[in-house]
Structures are given as C-alpha cells and as structure tokens.
Image 1 (cartoon, rainbow, N blue to C red):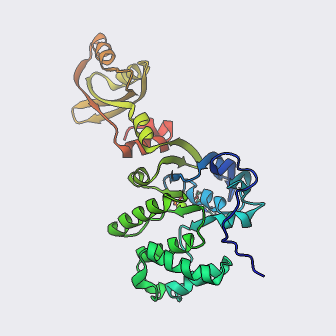
Image 2 (image 1 turned 90 degrees about the vertical axis):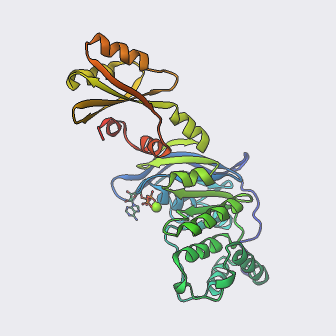
Image 3 (image 1 turned 60 degrees about the horizontal axis):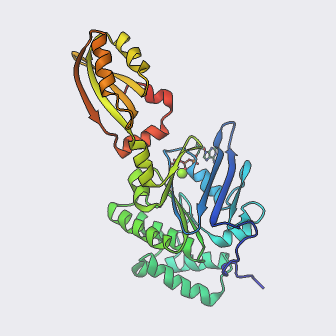
Length: 335
Ligand SMILES: Nc1ncnc2c1ncn2[C@@H]1O[C@H](COP(=O)(O)OP(=O)(O)OP(=O)(O)O)[C@@H](O)[C@H]1O
Ligand SMILES: [Mg+2]
C-alpha cells in the first residue's frame, strides 16, 4: 500500500528548539569555485525569511539543497530536525518548492497537473480532491482550472507553481523568485498570497528586489558571492546601515593631497573622489554617531584649502543593498 507522504508529519528527532530549518557550514561546488561557502543560518517556525542577493549570489543553489533537490558538497541542512540528505523523504513531506523555472506540464490542464503532482506525492484520493479545490481557490485559479497550462500567462503559471507547492500542506514553503517576470498587478497579488500562506507556514523566498523582501519578510539574509553578508529584520538592517551617513564635500585643493588627508580622518569609513568640471567633490562616509563635519572643516582650513560646500546625504535602501553586496575595494572606487 502506498504511504500518504502528505500526512501530518511528526516533529523530527533533532529539533528541540523552535527552528524549522537549520543550515550549518553549507558549501557547494559546481566547478572549481564554490557557489556557496560556509553558509550558516536558521529559520524559525512560522517565520517568513527573505533571501536577497544579486544574480549568481547562490540563492537557487541554497534553495535546491534546502529542498533535498541536490546534496551539498559539504555541510548539513535539517528541516524539522531531519537531515535533507539522509532523511530526504521526511524532508519532502514537509517542504513545498516553487523552483526558479517551474517544470509545468504544458499539455495538461491545471486540475490534471495538480492531480498528477498529488499522485506523485502519494496523497490519497479524497484528500487530494479536496486539497485541489482548496489550492485552486487560494491561488485564484477558479476560472482556469480546465485550461491547458501552455495557454496560461506567466503570472498564472506562477500561481499553478505555487498551487502545486502547497498542495500537500507542507510546513515549509521554499519559493525561488516567486514574482519574477510577472506583471505589476500579479506581483501585488502574489505577494499578498505569500503573506497569507506565511501566517500558517514557514516560508523562505528569494528575490533580488530589496523593497519586495522588506515588504513581505520578517527577516532578511543578504547573500553575495556565496556568502551571507548581512542578516537582520528589514527595519534593523535599514537602521543599522542607515547608521552610516554620507557627506558630499567640495574642496579647493590638489586632489592628490586632499584624498589621503580625508582618508586619514579617524571615523571616515570610505572616501571617494568625484571630479566635476571646475570643482573636486568628495564623498565621505562615516557612522551617524561620529559626525565628521567639524573635523573636516578644521582639517581643510588647516591645510589652507578652501571648503566650497558640505552637504549631508543619507543612503537609500538601494544604496544599502549595493553597500552590503559590494566588496570594500569596489566601494572605494569612484563611481
Ligand atoms: N548547474 C550549474 N552548473 C554550474 N554552475 C552553476 C550551476 N548552477 C549555478 N551555477 C553557478 O553557481 C553560482 C550561484 O548560482 P545560483 O543559481 O545559485 O545563483 P542565484 O543567486 O540563484 O542567481 P540568480 O539571481 O541569477 O537566479 C553562479 O556563479 C552560477 O553560475
Ligand atoms: Mg536563482
């Protein structure tokens, strides 16, 4: 007799705390360079976690490993206490996965495809039928359940992808760029659907859109070149990074001398030179609690240069994202 892998799972053997996903020292190589390296994080039960990173950062790689889709080169991942490699069946019962490109069967109708997915997951007939009705409603597919998937727009295909991911009522949802390539109205609807699902489930979603993760997620991990470079609530992340202030200063003096003097000011975290016609401007970054305006004006005057202007400019969220995903040396390069 086929087991109903969708049955309500028991808590795994190694899950004493409230963490639903636990990732330790995760490293994966496709070739000589690691796609992700020594990644560590946990996801609490019921949390909506955002995985933010630019193209090639390692989001999809991490998610494939989290879902048991492929084993990591090194390190371990547990879902509800079950190891994704050793107990992959237990993990699959608990996880719903929306891959980056959904392998939909374009010749099937929406309902036939969902039945096919339910059968693959060994759901029993009665439960499957009632769940198909539920997910069609939840994903607002009522008008399309008899439509051939090949005829659906990208946004509706994405909804079918989400519908199959939640069909077996998984505790964890892993959504890889759920709003990519769909129109703005459908983006809004998909985001609210994710928030709705997030009330009952643990959700990990990836995105390269900062406002999107800030809007949906309780916590954000920023991944860059296979490493976690920041992890916090969207609010704290913005506040912490916005704790960095930026000054635009125009100084009359030889840049070759001005630049090293500005860089030597203690508290200046980054100084860049931005020459404009007839004037040399500098951008000086410093921590909010360490205002450098007084010191800069004294320094300029003591060198007999002229201070033509000085202006505070705060960093936008997009700049924050660039800041955390840009290497120190690149951050120092003039833009
Ligand atoms: N199947 C593969 N074979 C070889 N290299 C791969 C493979 N998949 C991903 N990579 C490489 O691993 C790194 C991480 O890729 P990954 O797809 O995880 O990034 P991502 O954050 O999902 O990017 P995107 O935003 O473009 O989807 C990249 O350098 C990528 O080129
Ligand atoms: Mg990806």
